Amino acid sequence: MIVSLTVNPAVDQTVWVEQLQPGTVLRVNKTLLDPAGKGINVSRMAHRLGQPTIAFGFLAGETGRIVERALQSEGVQHEFVGVAGQTRVNVTIVDGQGVATSLLGAGPTVTPEALSMLVGMIRVWLQGGGLLVVAGTIAPGIPEDSYRGIIESAHRFKVKVILDTHGAPLRHGVAAGPDMVKPNLAEAEELLGRKLPDLSAVVAGAKEIAGRGVGIVVISMGAKGAICFEGGRVWHAVPPKVDAQGTVGSGDSMVAGLAVALARGEPIEEGLRLGTAAGAATAISEGTALGTAAGVAAQKRGVRLERLE
Image (cartoon, rainbow, N blue to C red; front, side, top):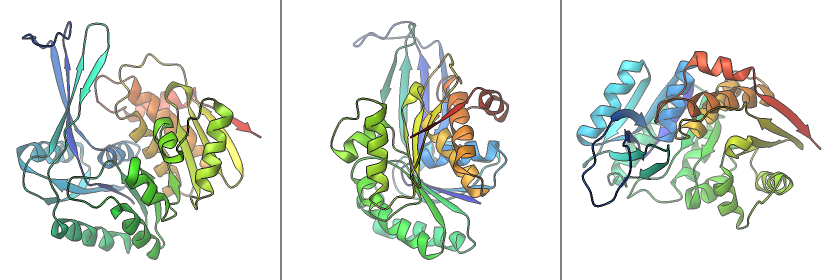
């Protein structure tokens, strides 16, 4: 069972316009709504790949009900704690040239009582084993070191943890020694405090992060693939060339593929193939939609793994 935690879920809205002109009235050609938040996307993709999963998080107001109804329609098991306010809305505007502009919401404030309730619910599930994915930004009101405590709690139940976040929550979370972290290039650079300008620098960065007590480090680089460091071994996962329609959710889909392989006890190589394929399948999907199981299978045939010294 993959248990995902998203403390700041969202509704992703993608709108298409001919030309983005600030200060004018624009007519929308098309719009799409998707439930979102990193952990929620991980559970949605894991479900599509046939892996049992449950999504935990906070929801608020009418926008929160949109997320819940969408997960119900997809058949994704979920448990949420209600909080005051409205679940955030992220708006991506795509113009006629395919250029995307994103507006990201802040999300509702989470009280200490609500956080304690959610952590308690998760602990009940972790007693049965499985894999925990802690992903996404923290919501207002949540201490920036909260992920560290959650990871340490999961390890007390002998549950493996994948962490996918950025900034202070990533720094604090790494200190708890998660079994895997999956920052993108910019997030890894922020964590390390330096640029990683080429492949050898990314490899060195992944080794340094692993040296802080992390089991597996995967640094994603978009169309350039991902570097993985595990147990002294290094791989470069190279995705197939695709006509990307949007990258929102691609990193989450990659985490889902990695999580599915880890939950099944498969080697990291299989996780890299499945995760890279899932990311590519989402990249060619319209707007903020995730890839399908058939799309992942098709893309997996084009994934290339290179073992690096």
